[in-house]
Amino acid sequence: MKEYRVVGRQADKEDAPLYMLTVFAKNHVIAKTKFFGAMSKINKIKRTKAEIVSVEELKEQKVLRARTYGVWIRINSNNNPKNIYKEFRETSRVKAAEKCFQSLAALYKKQYYDIDIVAMSEIGDEDIKREEIKQFAVDGVRFPNIFSTEKPIRNGLKMKKI
Image: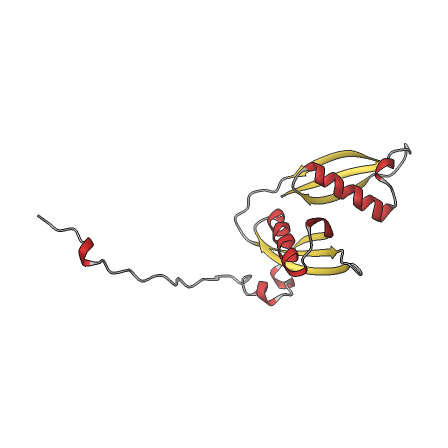
């Protein structure tokens, strides 16, 4: 999955305003499809009346520290759409989006096209709301080593000195 910034406008007007949308998609074709879907929902502009000005892939710096991301999501359900806020602890925005899509697909049995990420922002450790994320945000987190004991060598496998 990659992060794209798609910029488009209404095609038949010369002075039409530009609309920008940040999309998480597998490739640029799916990013364009998500953009046209958002244009028809929000601005009431059909695909035939819109044109795409640019599609740009956003690349994040390689950072090895974990950050907490707050994600606002909209899920299209059978009866009515649901608005959800979730928090994820990951090293990049793309990995947090992947984790978001996977967890919502498991919880709500929804496909990728039924899930819209409305906004995503990096949040500080003091702004974390979820307890399961808060426990990993403190300094000096250590995990127990469960398999620290050495296994004894069996007698038949020992090497003998000659």
